[in-house]
Amino acid sequence: MDIHEYQNKRFFKEHKLPILNGNVAYTPKEAGEIAEQIGGKAWQIKVQIHDVNRSVGYFTDADMDEKSGVQTAFGIDEVVKRAEKMLGHPFLTPSMQKAQIVRRVYVEEVCQAKEKLNVSVRIDFARHAYVIAVEKKGKLKEFEIPHLKPSLLFWYKVLRYIDVSGLTEAKLMVVLRQMFSLFENYNAICVEFRPLVLTLKNNWVIEDGRIVFDNEAVNRFSDVVVLKETPEGNERQALAQKYNFRYTPFDGNIACLVNGSGLGGATVELLRVHNGRPACLLDVGTEPTGDSVARAFKLALSEPNVDGVFINIFGGLTRCDTIAQGLIDASREISGDIPLVVRMDGTNAHIGERLLFESRLPFVVIKKPEEAVKAIINAVGELS
Image 1 (tube, rainbow, N blue to C red):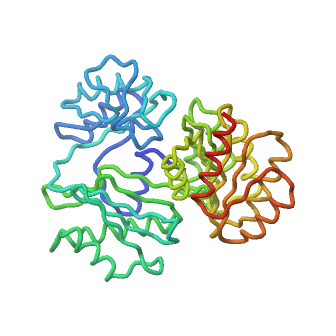
Image 2: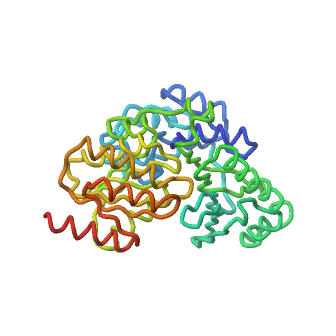
């Protein structure tokens, strides 16, 4: 589950993380008033939509000299004018199938930076580990957190790589530890700052950032669950959100069902490496129920352009027998004659495989990921 930038920044502020002065506006007049309250001579106006590619998106029909989703205004009048051309207009990014109407913008002070870093903490599902990633001057370095709990020595190792010293280092240590605290407190999948900026006054501040919440954990946090929204103009995404799984559309012909965002990205990439074309990615999370699996699978089978389904499951917290039963239940309700390839590994994988075999439904179970990918691509190719 993703939330808007302004909502992310409220969580950052509550966890004593440094953010720039800013607020959300729903009207051009409100945008101008916020800029006036912030003070200064320049402000950023940012569209608020659920897409990390806002800065490379564009307005499809707005008559403006700059169509980016992140714009800089000089003077209150310009803030109002730019907000007027952004609010109520359709905005499209490379990862969106259809433009969304912008309902709100975030108005924020502009700061001058001495240095910028991209910093994140995330779950690496492949390694069963928490990972701190630091991108500095285009170079990415990852640090695996030992025993899922960072020690003081671990943080100094990260700081040595970033190469800061004195008070600047001490301030950065506080930011990094608070970032991890936020990640841990909300059982998040990822917390990232893109970028984390060192200002001319040697203060660290988050210019942009986000928290990716685990759908399975969201309902445990009342301050998060109230932020759930129904995606605009996409009934499939709305249905996925309702039943606690994630749906990402693509333009291919192979539907992918996985349990975890890291595994999902790796699955899509593996398909593409072997010239397969994903139609959609359905992520049922790390602790799915049989019902959520069944509904995700039905959604995959109902896609008009899908010629085959690849189910790629790694059981840690996820029980493979739960996945298998959900697949079986859905298959018995929906008749179809398309290839279904399953790869399972981990908790109760042998039980899940046996359930699929005993169901006498047309599931092909293959142990190795690469072989499974090749099998679904070949099977789909034979149909076309």
